[in-house]
Image 1 (tube, helix red, strand yellow):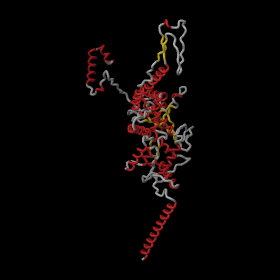
Image 2: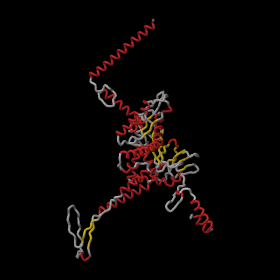
Image 3: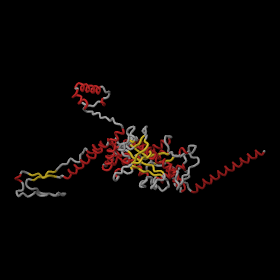
Length: 524
């Protein structure tokens, strides 16, 4: 009975009884069993808005996730695997795709843009401490663990800042942890919610950013500055519509991870205690003890030793049931559930790679789609805005000016292909044969094949061309080289060349005779 009915029962018991009966009748006519609370089904509900729910729990979840990332090996492993499969060692690869007015890719301009972007990627952030792949991995880890991450575009000249990149591009990124946008900053009159200033349509207009990290503040300094949305990057994990702040990837598995850690620690301590207890000495009745009251002997164990016991004493060894034989099965079951709630792969998290080729490939295929989703999320929220802002500012580079060709379709200047690590190969021979069949059937391209191996197609072509030319110049024969003259003797080559020159000379003579005949006919 609710508190209101309890109060009414003292004033009008019949009224309270009727209210309770109506409530029970309403519960009885609900169309789904899952909507009916019972002794075995609590039917827990969440009626709050997305922002209310995040405001109530977001900060606590963020801090708990950080603790797990600092102290729990499995939690560290989940985030490490996400970094490897989403960002990888080379970071998100960007292939510029500028085209001319006829729709053809301008290879020279694309290669120049890629070279310049690679030079800028050495020091892209304002501190100059991280390369672009390092920064992207840190940004991803922060977004997954804390639920979100921010970045400010620093464009052009800024007081007291020298852009760390040495290529003359006036652009850097200031990466910010979510602590810089305070949850507690709310102002109804100014339409500020959890540090975000929004308009009537729910669009973010300004981010109110603290001047210092809350943990680094001294005294009573608690000042914020508004930064326009166009100058900020916000990469967040969102689970509901209208949600302003992101939520940690661990929000659904946090209690499970904490329980796994506590349980393993308890089992580990129990095993250590059991291992330390080797034996006990059993004594008989009191009249069998040493009559002089002297303590019994100390027994120091060593391999192959023998000893004697005092009257009335006996040695009993202790049998330990630790480690628990069911620990591995229980732990693996919990890890499978944790992997399901974190977009992760059980095998990579648990380091359990048992199974056939088919089962391992099936897991990789399913995990690959999850990785692609996360890569698309990261590219859309971080990599693409960064590349486009860099290219915009690169055109203002005065140290090494960028020259655009006259036939460039300016609408395609910012086009590009973004991709990260691809699905690893279990059996390279089978994978290569599959790609060859798809290319032969016009179902795939060589560029897709190169990207599937995590390589830049243009760079692969350049290196391959260089190798083929070197092989031909040095008479090196390979199975995939179409040059039929490789491997022939010098005399055969000279003969073939002489025949080719003779054939060419004969063709030239025939052409000259035909030209003379045509001129004679015109003169007649």
